Length: 198
Image 1 (cartoon, rainbow, N blue to C red):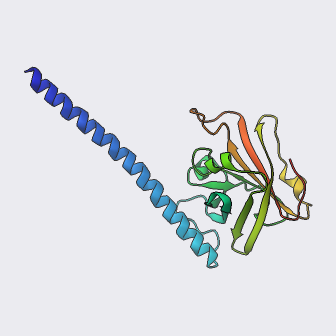
Image 2: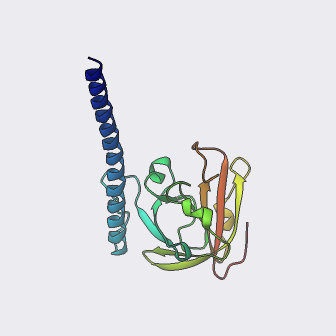
Image 3: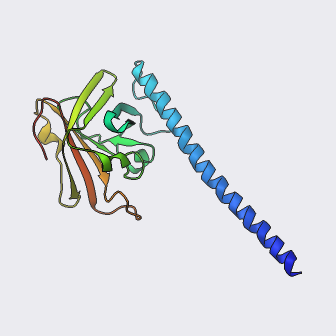
């Protein structure tokens, strides 16, 4: 009788484990599929289409491709920075400047996925941004850890700047176990002829 209970207990535990593996597999499969659909939408954007949604009910679309050659990073940037958008990739704040145009472009990403590379960024790193109308190069000028309650960025204050600036933003610390918090890691990059820092 006791060995039968142990046997049934092992079977139940095995089924429970398989069920959890299936849930994890479903999560990774959905993430992989979303990545493929976003990539396809980006290729269509480069071919001349506008606001190509990766799936019919998406509230975002790819607007740029960001590469950081030293770290071997390539990220597609989506339009908007809501929680729904950031679940699928880094996002361009809609109230900021279009990437590659004069002014400040603000791009946010999660510290443990899209923007985890920020922990390894250095001053002087080259960042390339490709948009449908061309390619632009930025150089990291400064980075800092700030408290979002005290640190406000007004993109309009950069509107009259002759050069474009790029602000990359992620939650901080990078290895925090709990999501959220008020600290942010920010990295400011300037078009190569610009000089202003944080």
